[in-house]
Length: 302
Length: 101
View (spheres, each protein chain N blue to C red):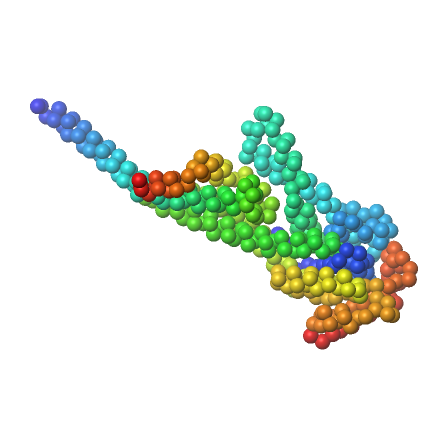
């Protein structure tokens, strides 16, 4: 069951803008307020190990009094998913084992589209196992994969609803045929329809979770044209899915940065600026020190 | 003809009539649904094409949907294979069902 109450903070943006660093800073500032939080890296690049200066894994590890950090192993989730799928296929085509043909299913691991689905499975698992952490901060992969991740449940739902409508028509026609043929309606359980119904319920929950008021999307940009134009495209794509960006986080600002261009592009959103750090932000202490001294917020009128 | 023989003949005649009626009824019912069955098989075929269309180069749903549904779609796959036989002349198939010569 997907929990709708846990507060979620997604950090998205162009590769290299500092999503992981700002996710870590946010996680630490929440943890400093003595609120239990969990920071999860969904980015296959896994920078959190370097940022916190310790070896992390898919099992949450405590790095600060109220903060646990974990890194999602995408390949592991793909393998798990394929294993389940292969078992499912083998149940249906068990006779192939007599000829040792089932090994050909192994090629499925290279099928396109699996990476974002693996992320979605991992995300469901995170929600189910968030435990005492009422706040989960998700350090997302670069734009392309993040957007595929966000759009997957919505896109799947469109397909599922269209397929279910067609399946219902098929079942209704079968009932009519049975009534005419045998003079009575024979009730036959349609496994495909039942499966479609279950999948729709699950995908609706995921869409609701993305659109819930407790879900926040933070868009990270640098004060330079390339990351800014990508951020505008990300926002437009998310708008199309009905997902709102909560906050713009301008990272690596300097005295000469032109923040007006960022403000102009995101007039109706609050902006938080994070000046470029002169030293490398590595370790919880360095991050905490940075937070105390550097961040400031620009509130723009909507 | 003695009475038991007559009764036996009447019973046999009744059963024969019942069988004849049943056969005629079944044939009429089968005739009545012929077009509906064809139409519904086409629906099932379209469903199969939508879910498994990637195998013939059609736009497909996200992969995990196909993977979840494919193992339950043995009947639809058989239908797809049957359709291959008539794919070169689809109108003949349709005209056959509609009894158009």
